[in-house]
Length: 366
Image (cartoon, rainbow, N blue to C red; front, side):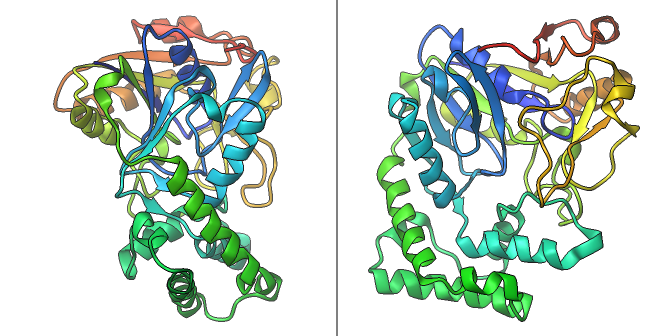
């Protein structure tokens, strides 16, 4: 079974969604789209004949009929799942595919998300640029308190579910201290709890835990974020508590029985970054090249501020990928996926250092 691992080569936002959708569209046979790491903080956008789509809790191959699999390293978010499922159903997309998950997936509660936003508010001038989806808070909660699987939670009576969520809320209150006034209405909102319990049941109903990988001809692993955000083990500005390398995907690929694996490193011809944290040679987009345009989906938000631009050193990129390759026990083919080529022509720079390059325009319809 063939496998492709789609990896962001920088800080994320390289165009992984477009690459995933392209390979799904042109695959010969049935495709399984594996969401490999992170959670619904991702925003992988594609441009199609039916307009643009931004996938968070679904894979970017969904539009072209790829079934989704949330592997054990993916963090489920029942609220985002229910919302996105509804949106994709309205656009006749969600009903085209089957959905699967590993029983061991961690899952976020509303309190993880709210705590994330509270912590970011309290940081004031020292913000981390978090997306507010509660990823770090979910990971830390799993490390520091009692948790249960989503199936076990859904099997409880409603009163016991509310008791468990109260325990989660109490955990955060002990950590955070007094809840800021502007969060209290939502923090203690009984309707939010009721809706969340319904969202959990909905996710368990729609996403099966029984996956038969042998029915697929190709598996496309869709990583979140990029190599420069790889797990440091510390919740600091611009980091992620997951592996953004090929590590998770290769482990799952072996479990699924994939024996023909290609790694696809995705990059724009320049650097971009959300939120705070170091950005090499940061500058304004007009300085990078006249053709670099405002991003369609990556715009200002209250959690991450402005979308940032920087100069890309292609030799540094090559060293980064070669370092990644050196850490992989088994040799694999790899390809550079160069996106946004219509904004800035640097193909010759890449050809000097890489043999296998595929190019994409920013406005490509997939």
